[in-house]
Image (tube, rainbow, N blue to C red; front, side, top):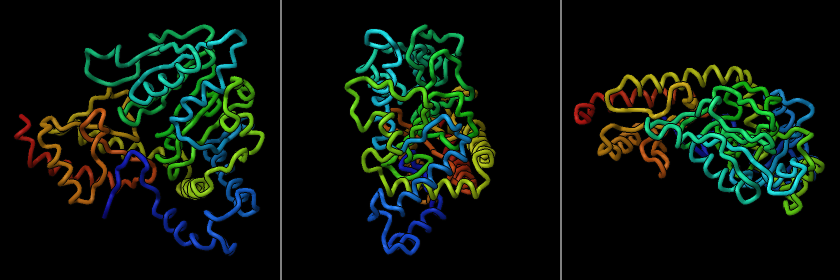
Length: 370
């Protein structure tokens, strides 16, 4: 059995892949593949409308929020967010934009936003925790929020660093959350946020689709130079059809949404995700060879980075893991070590297989780590 622990593009449910394969040449008797359909034809419109409704159901998205299907991934949204929201401040530019920095993706978001407004880094985990050599979210009591910020941006789950919010921040400004790697993995209250965005290729579907959930009152504030195709108001008014949407990625995402419903919805998946993460963290914490460098109250359930105390064993670890059918465990190049991404589509059996291998490897090699 092969288990794929890639951080993204990531594992998809086997049921979804089999259904997509069976429908590849002929979707529901239409005589067309979804890849060949007009995005404005009745066949694809039914696919997209169903996908939007299923996502609204899964997250209990309130009626005063739009669900947008866009392109460009979360990296593009790093620019699209300030382009759409910096105009919320009714004064001369540049607008003040609050950001909390909790890892690598926060850094990228901040750098991009600085092109379109005055970024205030309200809290920086790297600076706050440098002496402790661990990753975490700075205590909210230490955040220095701007009184006139257009919005507060957070990365709800740092895919590279393995840091995840276990609480909802409080702010006077609308909260914008990058949920690329933990959307649909846990129950959330969408109304706690002004904007939620996510690249689909981690917990939803293939690369190419970006989900944006935006409250109605935050539409219509784009800066004058915001490209028309990136203006959320244009996208919302045209039902995500202002330009040709990523049709096949939407189709696969829709199949994933239906699969999630069959599993019992987000609440049911959250229970499984808690169990999977607890199993892997327990293996790391009780081992002699491995360590996780994230403070326990901030540990991600989706992306679990860990390091071998004897890093000369890294290559042997990865080679032996591949022989056991455990793939894509190398950590991100910017931080090194290992990383297991255990999204919704990763079954409990996959984590059990990984833990079994890690314990065997620990037993065989731990002596050399001391």
